[in-house]
Amino acid sequence: MAVSVLMVCLGNICRSPLAEATLRHHAARLGLDVIVDSAGTGDWHVGHPPDMRAQEVARRLGGIDVSALRARQVILDDFHCFDHIIAMDHDNHRMLLNLAPADASAQLSLLLDHLPGQEGRSVPDPYYGDDADFERVWQLIDAATEQLMGSLR
Ligand code: 4NP
Image 1 (cartoon, rainbow, N blue to C red):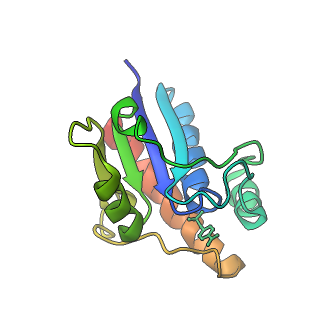
Image 2 (image 1 turned 135 degrees about the vertical axis):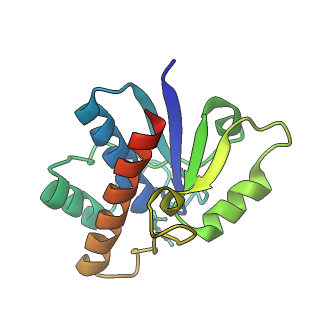
């Protein structure tokens, strides 16, 4: 059965859509069947496409079109439906731990725990940053999801 992964950040318009897209990209490259989705702990951007800067960096550095993705908020069912729920930063990891029902089956982790040398670190929130911040975030997320894909296979 295909492993399932939910990527989570705050708004679901910058980091987690990039993590969703890069994980899907690495899975396809390796011919692996993975169910991937993303969500936000916040609800401000529900229904919105990824931030234009996230769309631009994905297209420019990854050749990936993320424009069709739409933000949604984490729901309690996610803790039962996904094998892995992966937070982009400590704040969102903490929020997920607080939200998680006692009988949650999903395994929670921090994205950068999957990238050797970056364990325990957060993917910084680029929302109030510039293009260079989005590039840095892209590099971290792409590298971490590539490693993650290797360990999920
Ligand atoms: P994300 O970035 O959590 O990576 O999607 C943010 C998007 C929106 C906001 C903050 C962070 N916001 O405050 O609206």
